[in-house]
Structures are given as C-alpha cells and as structure tokens.
Image (cartoon, helix red, strand yellow):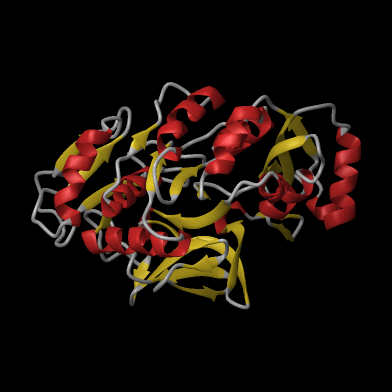
Length: 369
C-alpha cells in the first residue's frame, strides 16, 4: 500500500499515473485530514487487481475501504469524456482524498492535459475565478466538478464568479442531492450543469442527468437502486465478497424511480421517516420546502416522537424572511399532513460530512435539543 496525502495532488498524480498506463505499482490510498491506514491492515496482502483504495465518507456508518481497479478508473474517466464531448482540461475544486476529487485527477491524466488545483483555503468566488482562469484559457473543452454547496455559493455571489462558471463546457454536480429549484436557476443562468449520481463503489458518478454512462446498467429491486458495469468496485478491503456486491451488481441503499431509462433519486432507504404508519421520503419534503424563494437549502429528518414513532422535522437555510407557518402550510398542500414538518429550524448553514454530504446525525441532534 502507498498512502498519499490527499492535499498533495502532485503526489497523487505520480502514484496513479503508472496504474492508468497499465504498469504494476503499489496500491494507492489517498488520505484525508486525520486519516491513517492501520485499520486497512497494510500488513496483509492487498486484494488482487486493486489500484486504489478509497474510503467512503462514513456518513451512514463506519467508513469502508472501497477497492477499485485501474480498469474501473479508466472506464469511468473515458465514459465521462465521451458523454461530455471529449477529453479536456480540468479544474480540481474538491478534496482529492474523496472519489469525486480522485476522478478529476484520473480524467486529467487520461486526457493528458495539465490539471489546475484550486487552493483548499476555503471556497470563495474570487479564488474560484483565479483558479478557473488558467483552465478557461486552454484549448478544447474545459470542465470542473462541484458539490451543490459550492454551486450555490457561486450562484449567490454572481458577477465574475458566475461568469467563470458559465464559461466551462460542463460543470459536474455531485456528492449530494441537488436542490431542483437551485438547479433550475443555475441552468437558466447559462451554466452547463450536469447532475451526477454515483459513489465510491462505482468509481464516482456513473449516471449523468439521469442517464447511465456507457456500459453502466441500472435496475430497481423493490425501488432500491442496483448498479452494474465496468466502473464497479470489486468489493471492500478485507471483505471483498460482501453481500452488497452480488453477481456483478452493487446493491445501493438508495431509492429511485426509472422512467423510460431515466433514473430519479428519491433518497436513502435508511432516511425514510415512519410517522404514524405513514412513510415519508425526506427528499420530497426538501423539494417542497425549497420551492419557497427564500429557502436556499433544506434537510428533513425523522426525530423520535412518543405518539407517532417519528415526527418530520426540518432545518433550513434562508436568504430572507420566511413565515414558518406559511411554509408548513405550503408543504401540507403539496404533500399532505403526514409529510408536513412538525418543526422547522432556521440555521446559518447545513453541517457537512464528506464532499458535500449533509451530516444528518448532527441535524437530528440539533432538532432534538
């Protein structure tokens, strides 16, 4: 195993390059702040055909070491370029120890183009504009990848930040669900945003704007999403034959619908709220809340309730005054009384865990106190 500090992108490039060229090299393990490799047992042999071990965010339980082959990384990067319009120049704006950041590095290596890395000192419009200028001066397609929080900040800031964003040939959005209202505003502003769905186990995004990448297959089993294809992981470190992978399919914990080949994500199975026998999908309530023009973001969770088992509760981020009684009434009209939050709390920002993922556990604790 070769541990690599995820903040050192040049070191990560050097470590990944031989794998993508078909050479034998030590398995790469990108590390985030405070990460180590003792729990990955570097003293034991690495599972065959493993180029990269990337940690899950641990947002829904203990973090796992996802095993990815060089073939899976290449398949993902090449399929992305085919979908977007060919190899291009990339701006890395996300941490390189998460799969979304690793894949930006991989795509840049496959394209043979110089990678521009945005400073990790904090995501601000001015810094984004400065970093983007190098990419936007390059010939050929220009790409970047952001999480919804970053996208929202650039949209709110407007001006030069939004102008730079509009200049990219594609802006991949992933890591967490994208607020439909914000996405509409972004597209209307002329940004070529592409929503992505995937995870470490699929070498990053494998469904773009609801449509699977080349070779990727999607099926639903009891509304739970299963994924297959050349980008798939071959298991978890020290547990490659887990039940999550079966006969070439990865069984996610996400709910969805599939209409005429287009996938729509409804949320995670373990996020579904059971209130008085009625099942509520948080995503639908979050979408109803963010239709209000002053609600920028929303996170809906279930908290214990002695009468109903769970009650629907929400934390929201606003950019103006909001009448919470009217907001609840709007949700009630759209989704019915069972989906209406019993409490709504305005917060300055939603806590994050991982690249753009909302820390729902922290939200639950906040709403219970």
